[in-house]
Image (cartoon, rainbow, N blue to C red; front, side):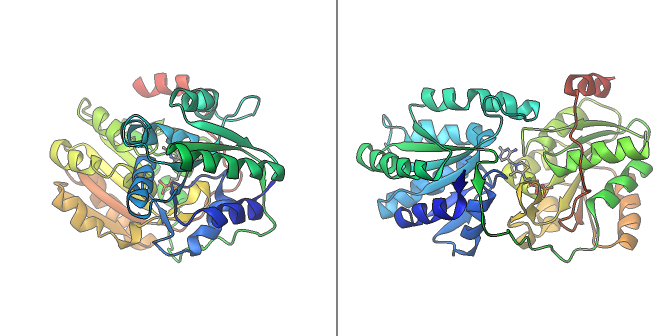
Length: 365
Ligand SMILES: Cc1ncc(C[n+]2csc(CCOP(=O)(O)OP(=O)(O)O)c2C)c(N)n1
């Protein structure tokens, strides 16, 4: 077992700037960072952005920054790691702290198992020196690996598996004051949509709640494609589907996911068809991995979506205006955007979508 408190205090002694994309495995070490100011900690919108912030920090401070992420974020990180930070390019040191979902012999979901299998190999291929942290005594490895990073001016990494970090402190999650629940919105969407509507739902609780509500309440309208991985890409999958379908296409997005690849909204504005309907469940947090905040509350989604070419914008904050706006949204000619302000709250004992290939076949029809 590795103490989160000891881990973070070891890091803080050596590092003054932290950035990354939240991960449930690492939540007990990133939670205390949320108190720091923006010069010391920034929650990035995607992992490539986090690597780039660390590069910018080095270019000014000549110091190593720490970049945290789930291993599923390595794909986003690889471009700036290989083509900027690599020792044969600009040679920029930094410490990667990676939550290792799907590590060998652990039980996890299919998308994590695949990523988990290749994580060490990927780091080796990238020539990133890596250590695995499992116990308090492993914290010594951080000093060694950091020294190596500073001397050789290269990125280095440490991997942390699930259920390794323990924390004495309970994480106090700030529940926002929004009135609507995602589960309420999803049930009503499923009741109101047409029989042949196609739904593409984002990574995390949105897909899990959609899967569960459909199953438990036996709501049959529409067909779902759950983006169990590929965070941030549900809107582009939806656009791909909408461009080639006559049926209505509903993308159920989260704010963390939308922000991860925000440029997609511009493509939807330009190329989105009338059948494209984009729903944003905005809880201003990465609820699925520990409720770490996003910048979504500082964004005017009406101005953003309309300026990018969406034809209509709708917004709901409570049950009454939700049902009214949902009706208008579903009747509108897209591309349309519907922002639903939701509380960070999920159904208890959530199921996870299983038999993914079968689900894909059912979706294709
Ligand atoms: C590329 C990538 N980075 C990080 C993660 C870990 N992750 C899974 S869900 C999630 C948060 C999603 O936030 P949001 O879209 O706002 O939905 P919410 O969790 O609030 O329902 C994160 C960071 C991931 N799956 N993939």
